[in-house]
Amino acid sequence: MDLSQILLKPVVTEKSTREETKGKYTFLVNDNATKIDIQNAIKMLYGVKVEKVSVRPVLKKTRLVGRGRVLTKRSAGKKITITLEKGKTLDPYKFKK
Image (cartoon, rainbow, N blue to C red; front, top):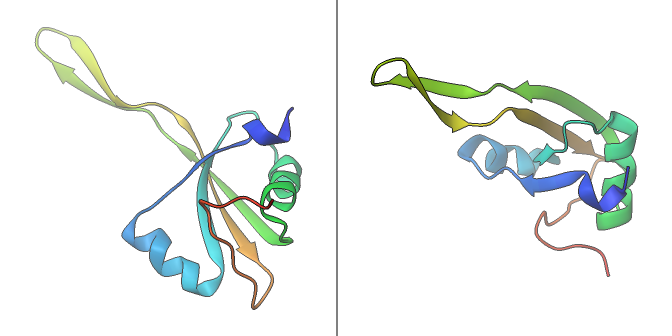
């Protein structure tokens, strides 16, 4: 898998912003990405070493509307939280040059 297609986008919520002070960053990733692929992509794109990767699924969110029709509000995917070494930081929107 191409390392540049693993990380889709950073997750910006109140909880993820609060965790950034502890060195934890949250991203949406490709469904086929493994923890090792994610570590290599972070190292290549941001130039920092990852200490820990936590992966959790994001379930599809649907709602019934009308007569049995289904409205999809959110597609399924995979969300990760990475922990960096102590004292290291990264800006999720800026890649290494």
